[in-house]
Length: 411
Length: 204
Image 1 (cartoon, helix red, strand yellow):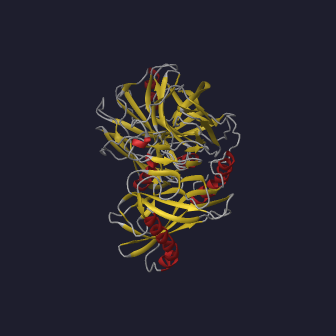
Image 2 (cartoon, rainbow over the protein chains, first blue to last red):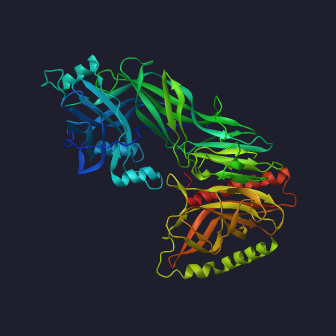
């Protein structure tokens, strides 16, 4: 349990939503060409020749004989009064030329990287863009570089120790738009053949397009036994680490989105939101998220439009639809079930985030995501006087301490 | 099983008595460097704080979540409570090790209503371990709490110890099933939990 305070619906500070681009699965990488730090990147003085992190993966089959791969650091700027970035600069910090699908690009320490580390509490948000002939592809991913051990999860600590981030599979190469092709050509004045792979991929600038949109977004679920006196208070700590997908569109701000990777939101506030779910509740828990579309007016970005989650509120509400019930029919039948007697309470302080495929649909893009797995989600079960003994359990085959979903049943 | 209960109480008392000696006898091993740890999720220790209202003499039962990193067993030699500063410290009555996957949110009376065996002298295998403990306090209409357990154990002949954070409150009441006892205990445990989270480094 926590001391319950009234929480404003939108209590956010200037830097409380730094966008991190993320990915998940690993892909084996083959280094084909040495990385070439782009010294021309603005305000990007090299601090050390030792790589801060290495990004590795595969961009898939190349449409041309070679591809130029550029690693950009995402730097949110021009925050509005609500703290939402009105511009996101993707600053090139390393590049490589490859002749097959694999890449492994060391990213040197630089002032840009350092700035991004500070903004992201040790995590830097990268976009890796590859151009081959007149086609391009891109993927976003966060890299934990200097997350403090107290705040890092096990995966982040392992990545930091290894110094390598394995990127998920990239989307297939797609033809550049005319605007993108013109921008590439302008940056590669020596390249007269439009089919040739550009040697230089310019920095990318996203500017906010239209108004911010708020939508309830699924962050978890709650199951309360159907017996008098039982309740579960679902806590959502605002200093969270929500991982959520984002999209690109080549031409349409209202649709035709393709997945561009994953983002997560890092907040600096430590306020808590909560909702108490009563007897028999089988509900999703939703939190209001803020979404923003961005437009590339020049043609230097991986898409013409981008849609991102840029922040979250701290009020928890019951969501729509009903989550599946406990698959054992009851936690007493679960080999990892735990007994819960009254009058008492059980406050589980550490939660693992559940990943959902459809947490919100905004402007035609369906987001997926998972709340961070640390102290961000908390379940506070109480059994009032006279309540029957009930049982708690987690996902099938999982101990409750390792499960992103907690069930509570009478038998 | 009164005989077993008496035996368990004796071993519990013995455990508390030998805790200091066991820790003092750590020898050259770093007491905190052994293989027994708290379970973690995402790098954070797994902690639950529980409460229950009990009648005088009855235990409030709770669970601490441990993990034996070693592929050889560790043996628990003693267990004592870790006080929650600012709260009356509950008395440790007994400690048990889960013998199935089942666990405990909160329960009244010892032994708990899930399979367990005495913890003192128990060899704990590799992997996750549920450690049940029962606490109580002497005075009616008083609340008692602990912030966790201090566990002394041996591994390959060396002595080690571990503090496992596990907040628990025993609210001793003449009528524990009354609404007022429940509410009082719930409010009390909110404060206990805040303290335990700070001690465990979970507070932000």
